[in-house]
Length: 222
Image (cartoon, rainbow, N blue to C red; front, side, top):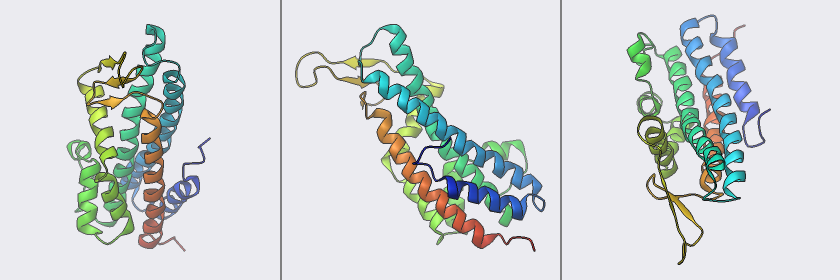
C-alpha cells in the first residue's frame, strides 16, 4: 500500500512499541498519539496520489481547458493541504508521546489546548525537554527548511484565503511556462514532485528517530 519512499518498518515499529507500552497505562495520551500517527500514513498517501495526478496533467499543458485545469487545481489543493497536515499529524503524535513522559509540560487537557498543538509548539517543547535527542534535531531541520515554509504558506492561502490565478507566458525566455500567483511558484512537473521528495526524506528521518526515542523512553511490559 505504501510507496518505497515511506519508512513502513519504522512507522509500524513506533506504533507497535508505543501500543504495547502505553495503550493501557496512558489511554488518553495513547488515543491522541494513535490518531496523529495514523494521520501521517493517510495524508502521505494522499500526497502520493495527488503528486502523480498533478504531474501527469501538467505535463500535457500549463494552460489547459477548464475540465483539465480543475484536475490540476484539485490536485494542487489536496497535495499542499495534505502535505502540511502530514507534518502536523506527526508533530501532534510526538506531542502526545511527550505527554506520556511529562503530562505537566505536555498537557492534553481541554479542547483549546488540543487545538493549540502545532508543529512549532511540539518543536519548541521538545527543544526544551529533549534538547539533545536526534528526533528534536530532525524537527529543527524541518522547521528551518524553506520547503516547510512553502508548504505552510500554500496550505494557509489555499485553505483560508484565495484560489491563486496563473500567469501564462507567451514569447520571450519564459515562453510556454506558467507561474502560480502564490508567491511566484513555477507550475511544471517539479512543482509537487520536489515537495513530495523532500517530505519523504524528512518523514523518514523523523520517524526513524522517533522509533529510537520511543524504544529508549518506554520499556516493554514484562
